Every structure is written in C-alpha cells, then in structure tokens.
Length: 370
Image 1 (cartoon, rainbow, N blue to C red):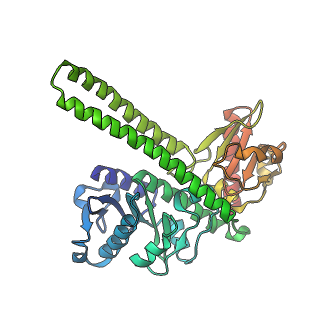
Image 2 (tube, rainbow, N blue to C red):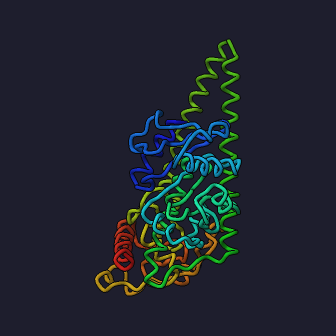
C-alpha cells in the first residue's frame, strides 16, 4: 500500500497535478495520508501518516483540516479507496470562480460525475455534500479540488480529466464558451460507465478470489501434486501480472488516459469508413474544441492539411454501439470531424497521415484557444 502511494505521488508531482495538496488511501479503519510539505517526487514511508477517528483530533492546522476532508470523502462510500486534494493551475483557477463545472466532456462525466460542484466552504461537511449524487470530484473555493476513485489508478485518471475539462472551460471563455451535454444523456453516460466498470472489476475480483483459494490449497497439500499445483499457480500469477500490465497500458492509451496529452496520444481505432483508417482522439486542445460543440474554422496556414473547416457532429452516447455513426453523415471530404463533448474523429489513408492531421489540428486548436 505504501509503495502504491509513493508510486502515484511521483506521477501527481511530475504532471503538476499537486503542488501543496495531499493524497490519501483507505487503510483498515482509517486512511494513510501524505504529510504536510512532503516531497511527492521522493516520498518515503516516513512521510505517510495513519489517521482514523481515534487519533484525528490530535492533529493540528492544515494537515488536520485536509485529513478530516479526505477521511470523510473516502469513508462516505464503500467502493472508494483513494482521494486527493489537487491543485493544478487550471483546477486552482477554476476553483477561484466558485462555480460548478457542467458536463462539457463525456470522460469527465464518466469518472467525476454528471457535474463537478463547488463546496461553499472548505470543510468536510460541505465537501461531502458536494460529492452527493455519485460524484467523485468537487471544487474547494480557492483551494483546488477534492478528487476520489476506487483505486489510485482511477484517482489519477479522474484528476487528469478534471484538469483537462477545467483547462477547456477556462480557455474557451473568450471564444464563446463551452457547451454541456444534455442532462439526461450525461446521467445515462455516467450510470452506464459505472455499471460496465463495476462488472469488469467484479470479474477481476472473482479471478483473484479463485487464485487465492488455489494458493491456499496448494500450501496445505504435502505431496507431489503440491509441487505441480504450485508451478501452475506460478504461471497463473505471471499471467495475472501480465493482465494487470495490459490493463495499465490500455488506460494510458484509452480515453481515460492519465497524462497531459500529446497530439496523437490517447487514440482509439474506429471502423467507420471503407478504405480509410479512422481514429478517435482526445488530445488536450482538441478536447477543448469538442467541449465548445461547434465547427472549427481553420487558420489559413493549416488549411493545406486540414481544409477550411472541421465540421462538428452532435453529442452522442458513446457507450452505445455504433454511436459515432453520425460522423459519416457530417464529415464529408474533411480529414476530421469534431464530436461535441467527446473528441475528434480523424481519418486518413494510413497512420502516418493520421498522425500528421492530429498534430496539425492540435496545434491549430492551441493557437486559436490559448
């Protein structure tokens, strides 16, 4: 457990999601939390403090306030295992506006909830109230945000999409602002994602339970079969580690990627067009363009690659099969199509051409919005 917090603390620090915040994880009847002023880039077990309802009153100052908030946020839900107070530049700036963030991106809806409210005060009771309705994030006035997840991995991914959405909300303000998803669609997207991810987690837990039973039986068996079973268990364990590694790779390359976005990171291959390769991208600035929910007028210097305009398809429930079919009706001869509140579909004859389009579009969006 300590090793997991140390690992993710470094990642939070590297991408500057946390400057002066805290990370906590459920442990026994309490939480394990990073100490005030701890160097997240080089965290050690000495920088982790165990807090529960028996000793929490013995702490003072900012640490006690943060510990109470994180303790309550984690203990509020049986499925939540980790939480953090995050303060990236975009999240901190938006928290100072003391307003809710509407469902402007579907991955925000999936990981953080149908909206991100702002607590009226930076106290546990107000923060927990703002997390009601199965929300996993809320802003804290002038102090960043509280984010939580079912694991440190999910916590990190939720922070990434919150940072991306906060950034999109801020930079779009002078360009007409963002548009939010239909409230009913946002609710369905959130619930369907939670249902799907819970089923996947249940399958993994079931597999882990079976493996544990096999291991226990092997330990109790004192014959030749024990050796054979132990060898088989070892192979299964290696397979489990490989599966976990593959899941981490999928997270890094899928739509809930947990890092700042390069132009062609976080792409999903699509089967939309005959004779053309298509991908769905969620890069940092193109996501902001999709949050605005309107066609993108291309600057002249990028027109040779992108054309005069990138059209926009309406928002859709992406968790439903063939939900991106409308892109075919909208894209025409353009090399890409914005999908409102979701991302951008890019098509080309091969991956080299797609990467060129993605990089150019990301740059064009950055110059327009930044």
